[in-house]
Amino acid sequence: MDRLDPQSTTPQTPDPLLPGGQGAVAGGSPAGAFDPWRYRDDAGVDGANLAGYKVEATDGSIGKIDSASDEVDSSYLVVDTGPWIFGKKVMLPAGVVNHVDHDEEKVFVDRSKDQIKDSPEYDETQSTDPTYRDKLGGYYGGTYGAPIPPMAPGRLI
Image (cartoon, helix red, strand yellow):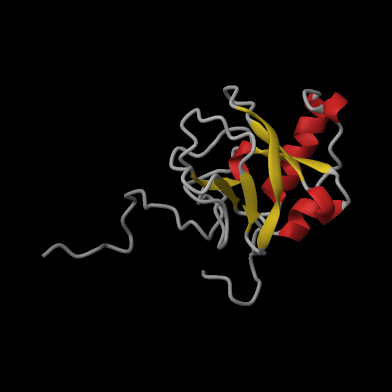
């Protein structure tokens, strides 16, 4: 049986909780870096028309999909929140979609109601504006949680 040499210069697989682990942190985005404008491969969207589907946050229903885009690297959902946030609409980047249940016509997102409620306000006239999209994508990317500081208690070293 081969022994591991602690002095070896063989590259090691980076620890996902440490710098160099491609930015992954505990509770971070599944399957690598978060891409706000692309549906996850395993979400089950598969080009389906999601308009009219209900949307479920991690802690309950937030409304129905008013419109959806499946443009390459630019996909999103516009959700009519009904009475939940006084009839406002919110724009959700495709990357927050965890999975779709086509039988129940529900889209499950991996954000809480508060995270969605606190997102940048949706303005239909700005939905294609790069500045707005950067702000929205940055907000949802940041809701995975801040990286653990290097010397924080509980940090794996």
